[in-house]
Every structure is written in structure tokens, then in C-alpha cells.
Length: 193
Image (cartoon, rainbow, N blue to C red):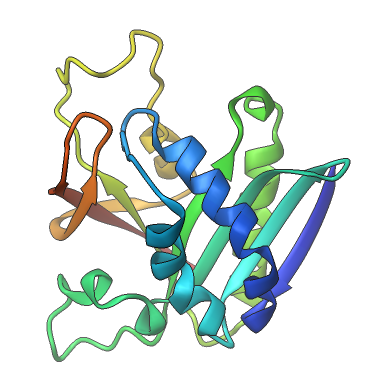
């Protein structure tokens, strides 16, 4: 496995690979996302324009099999800022956009290694005191949940993230079982560094 770090505007050269991974991985439960390249490019635009974004790419030979993305919360899309009170400073929070890893590579420690590299990079940027993540909210009894589904929420808890149920984002996207974009709720968790 080859791990590469790209920061700031270097993100742009990897945007196709990240978009493709997101479409492939997020179509599965719990996101059930019916993505397309144009929507992905729009979403990833803030990452590719930021001088402070972080990207970790993992390759198996020449194939991109995983990635971690992150951006200062203050530079993220507007929807990610809506749960924060207007008088709260968000300049010390770094947002972990996603950890992406193809199914056949999971359970081998690669995802954890990617995450640790990401956290170490954020820690080196001394101005950040928290990392934020956002997870889609699904009902425990959702009939679309696969029988063998293992939530990553327990992993986040083990890594020190604390969920804040009052901090919810509304994000509209086209799901695989819908014909148009519908609202989905995502909840924030934070880790103090």
C-alpha cells in the first residue's frame, strides 16, 4: 500500500478519484446516496480551492482504494455551519469530510492508519483544538439496513468523538430509492485534541 498526502490546492489533481470513491462507497447503507460526478465536483470544490484542506490517498499499485478528506470548518460549505450559534468561533475546528475505503480492503487496519495520519496532520496545525465529523442519522429499525451491517459509530466513540445530538445538519441529496433530492439529517460529533 502506498499512502500519499496532498494539502491545499494539490487536492484538485485527485478530485476525479475522490468523486469516484464517494459515489461507489456512499451508495451503500447508511447513506444510500445516488451520486453523480457533477454533484461531486460541486461538493468537493471547497476542498480543492482551500489552501488548508488535507487529503490522504491510499493506492494499491496504481489503483486508488481509499482516501481521507478534511478542511477547516470555517472553509466548509455553508450547510455545515448552520448548527453553530452566530457568536461561536469555528476557527479552531477542523472538519473530517470522510474516510473512504473500498470494501475488500476493510478490516486490515488501513482505515485506522489513514485516520491516524489525518489526526496527526491536524495536530501539527496548532490552531485547531477540535476535529468534527458528521454522520447520517438512520432509524435503528430501518428496513434497508443490511443484516451484517456494522456501524462505524462505535469506532468514533473509541477514537474519542462525542456525539452532540443538538448539532444537526440538513443535507439534501438523491438517494438510491428516490427520484429527486430529499433532505437527510446528519449529526455532529467532536473530538478534543
